[in-house]
Image (tube, rainbow, N blue to C red; front, top):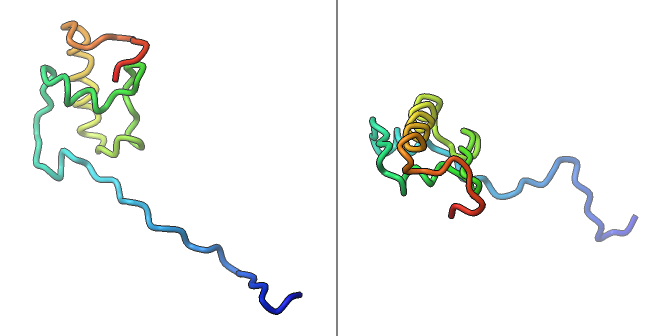
Length: 87
C-alpha cells in the first residue's frame, strides 16, 4: 500500500439534503381553491398527472385536498385531463 493512499471504513457523508416541508402547514393555508390554476399547476407534471407526496412534499391531508381540487378543475374544464407539454 502506498503511504498517501487513504481508505475509509465508513461512507463519506455528502451535503445534507434540504428537508421537505408541507407548504400548506408552513404558510397556514386551510383551503385549496380549484379556481387558482397557476397554484394547482405546481402539483402537476408536464403530462398533467398529479405529483406524488414524496416529490411534492405536502402532507397527506393536503394532498387529498389538492387531488380533489385538481379533479374539480378538470371537470370544470379549467385544467386538461391529458396534454403533451403543459408547462
